Length: 305
Image 1: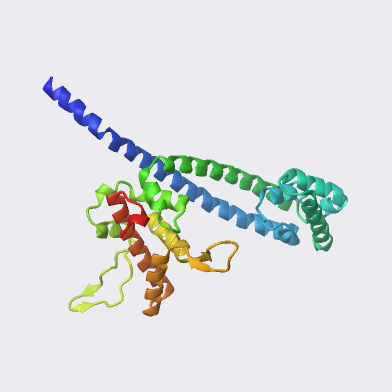
Image 2 (image 1 turned 90 degrees about the vertical axis):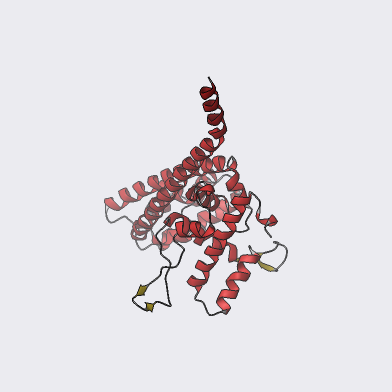
């Protein structure tokens, strides 16, 4: 009876850790899936652009974002210059307004006029090969599917991240958004696995490699890149976002870095003569040490001494 009671006690005591491990594993799977689909999405964009250049090269200048929903829906409805020229400006404006109801009719009319002008100047009035029209239709459908799947994954990642304390802690670091924070947290996993920040740095593959041969010791050593490439890439992106300048307020011209401490460290390395990439890797190493301290102490970046 005593053994059963002790077993139940420890099982109940370990339940929160088990739950957190499952949450982190789910988050890791979602972020990796998001990265994979994003890669396929980017490749499909390039393939779509290559086909569009052979059918309607000037179309890419009509809308601000070629891959916005309204842009893709219009080229899907009117795939060639001939189709556009057959329709009048009013029909095009109505369609544009229908596909982008949040914008004004004046904006729709302006875009319709730009579309008519681009169609009239297009050297390919008719698609030379039917295969190009088929490919264009296929890539547009693929882009919409990828958008839908990415949106669904982002919603799942955001919902799961809100229930994980580590994600909230990392998001307190200026320059780190929800997606990067989710990737960092999920790739690190349980911070208890690491009893020293250097072990976490080695896990990320940011530790310097040592080249020795006999009495020779290399003076220029690259990072090992032996650890998690996804964690390393997320840290690299986090550093680039953190040291980037941004306006303090939209109403002023004052420019400030998103993360003053990290930017000061980056500027110091650059003043020492370090190349851009070396300075960024040094910042990633510094950032990972901060993340280790924050997760171990369960505190936010503002409370870091």
